[in-house]
Length: 328
Image 1 (tube, rainbow, N blue to C red):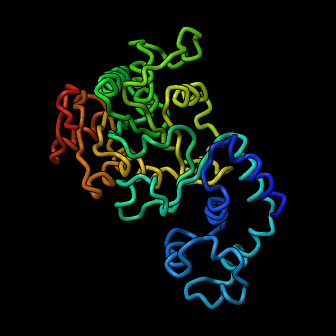
Image 2: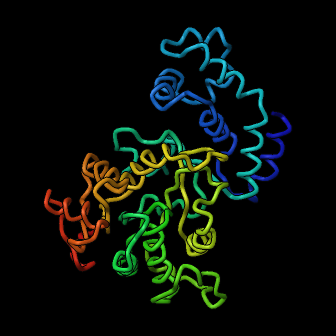
């Protein structure tokens, strides 16, 4: 660990990650298998900071109510592995930061939800996490109507100064991020597959940015075809965030939990195309629980992609057909 600290001291000015000595303990605690948010909160209530837990003995840990011997072994074993060193080194080399819930720069809206993440990994412009954010979400197999609607709302809301939040998934998510890029680059109709065009080389800093919330570690791009889109998000002043440590694969179970962050950092949620049983509706439920405004674009009554959205309108969500109808 001593050699690691020397490396951190030599490199911290280059990578511009503040308080890396303190933050490494937050990285460590996200790596502990099986700990879970509830147990972690209990430990933090007792010990205040992960740093205070780092040197606890097995005997001391076993005295904590609700912490099994298996979890204790995971806590002890994690410190003897090279995983922490590998994570810190990768973060240093790739300008990835971590923000804990105790950090004053942690997203204030997210801090207020029922189960906020203990920490967020972030790559890119973290200042926008506390900005004027609106989430745009929908189904992965978006229709042409859904694609155009996503880009239309994202493009115009970006020009109004709003940051666009979505999940970097296929379909509506991707087109929502794309609408933001179109506005920032003053290119009204860029196609995703043409994002690497060399003519798209400048971004307008006066408009809103985009935030991608992912369900995997930040050293993994998912889906792979969004590699260039992710790079363009960062180039144009946006950011990619995740509550999952490096190396975490995009497992199916991660995405419902990811969805609470999408709505949690946003002041409102816009739904464009959702089938009857859709992950999009999970995010909508989170938004309603969190007291967020929910807006819905109506869809074709003959399309399966519109069953969920049209039902939301029946239940009282605000129908919108123009970006000016969204309050911000």
